[in-house]
Length: 188
Length: 309
Image (cartoon, rainbow over all chains, first blue to last red):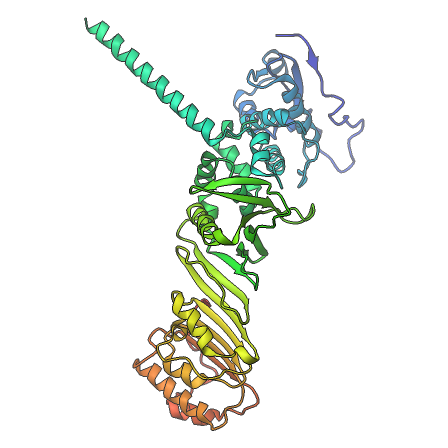
């Protein structure tokens, strides 16, 4: 693992120097956890920000890590690209402890990035962000012709689907024949 | 980005953010896409009760889903304008159909327009309807609604599971029941008719399909209520008329209610409303004639509500 650490202290709110008068109880220090994606770059994220992710929130609750243990064992998300995980971390930090707005206009405009973000967000179970992303995906094809939609969402034509189906059947047939031959060989 | 590579729940969430009309257009992209939409949107399609082919005088229907918040137009079927190129073509049931996309402005709803030449009008109507029927299913009620039929006989295609509703305004020279009889005889029994005329020469024959219409809404100055009261076989009638010259209405009304009450006739009838303008109805005569019983105002009478056709 890379030793690079990307702190998110700039995104996290600064700790108040003096406690507000109304707050009689001493403030509990915020705990932090660490995550990394495919690029192994570690991101330090507060527990408050991570609450958006049902998956990570569940992991945190079950593990009960101390600060040191968390630092030593960052959560690995090898199936998520580093830049996508960065986007997710940024979004969680921006919306930490806040009600989510009805619209989010800061999502990536490039369709490939958006596609990866949708998959990552779905995996991490961040419901609100998934809703925004899916809405944006739906908006991409508004007012478009079927041909344009096919290009944007990369949907195969009927002919391509039929060819792929034929190919799959052929492959399955060959595999089945191979298995039969192997079984016959074993029997001998 | 390949939509088919998304998990099912994500596909469902994306479709959730699209109008039904947008999903209908999306279904044109491929057979697999159509299948996917149908399988993910079963609950949404189940909630659709009605699809209307709404025609005015042009006989080029807008096909829409009526919602309380407004109509969601899924497609329009129009005569082909040779000066304009089509945006795309589709092979529907072996027929290549030209389409344009309605894009009046950024804010306006975008829907496909299926184009036809007069010689192939019937085939195009049928192909489009078959596609809609396959997409939304047979639990939906389909209506062909002629909204502004005035004089000419409309050419209404015979489409699978489509009921025909008409709004008829007859003025002056064409106030002739024969014209309408010709239409009625050509089509299955109407679901609903709204008829509005100042002069109605003659009457329909007692066997007319007019009287078999499920719901009649009639507005006539010189009325034919006695005929409706004698021959109507439908479920609901809403009649508005002018003064009757020989007080015939009262006796007809009494006779009608007594036949209805006894079960001798009008067994399908659920609801009848008659409004008479410029004429004082002798309420007591009618009440006595039909043997109405008076209910104390303090008592709560049982109510039975029926949806309007």
